[in-house]
Amino acid sequence: MAQLLRVTLFNMVALLLIPSMAFAASSEGELQIVKGEAKVIDGKTVEINGRQVVIQEMDAPDLDQVCFTKKEYYKFRCGVVAVDKLAKLIAHNPLSCEGNKVNDKGLLLATCWVGEPPQRIDIGEQAVLGGWAVYDPAQSNRYKRVQAVARQLRQGLWRAKFVMPWEWRNGNHEPPKENVPHNQ
Image (cartoon, one colour):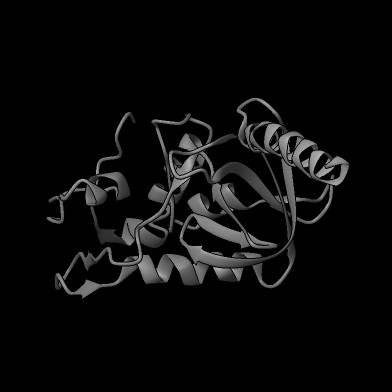
């Protein structure tokens, strides 16, 4: 009987602790740091030590997204190119990602860097500057000026006709006549 009571007490304590641990791990506001070698999932998502992290304040074409060349209007898979460009930015260097929010899928939204301070490189900023990602006005204007430079220099997507990634996800698969960034 005493043994049964100990097991039951242990199980009760465990059941009480598990929900609080899950809440603490996903609570908004608590800074979470993820470090290690990253695997690129898509143009804005990496996996570090089994944890998927979405690079915040930017967006990139989905894997199935197509864009069109400006002159001949040829289709190309710009989502696949965005993945390749992000992988080259990271280039097998360990990433350090910090964030305090999770998205609706429970993935950490974070700013990610390669290198250590003071020489660390902001991966989101570099992806937008290279033109294979865009700033996300729904999150912030942090990369708005960087995008303006990429657009002026006709980097990456700015050499093509494309719809913004969030519009693509909402079903708009027709390229615009001109690319005019939202809120710019």
